[in-house]
Image 1 (cartoon, rainbow, N blue to C red):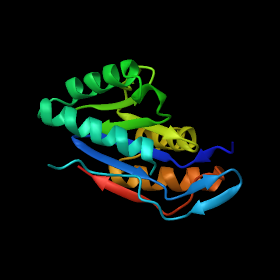
Image 2 (cartoon, helix red, strand yellow):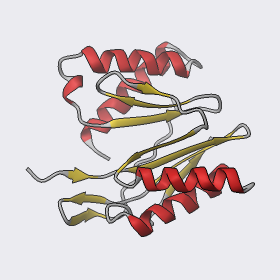
Image 3 (cartoon, rainbow, N blue to C red):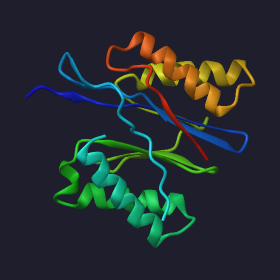
Image 4 (cartoon, rainbow, N blue to C red):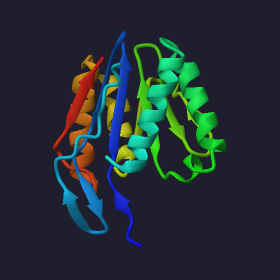
Length: 168
């Protein structure tokens, strides 16, 4: 079966501000299936797997309001142990002004030291660009995310410049 590639996501937390952005490309093998997908969502009151996880995470936030670390840990535990959830092939980036995590189905819960998180096909390119910009400039998180995703799109064939950014 041909692999669907549908995510380049970057999150930057800096000076009490957070920006989370993603490109808009969904690729099936070597074919672009969608060029303007919106993969960034705010939780207030891309793929089916990601939406399932998004809903589960929203439930955890409702159970533990204002406690992102606890909600993230509980989702990671459920994802790892639930017979249906553990078959989902996705990663989830969640963030607030104090914390940011990458959550995986194998129970990994990763909070980077520098407040910069990235996943997906172009994630490593965006991560490298964001780290360089964060250490060598005074750009805002939103500007770092925008420029880093543009750099990733120039390198990664699975990433495009239809960028959506959410600021917290």
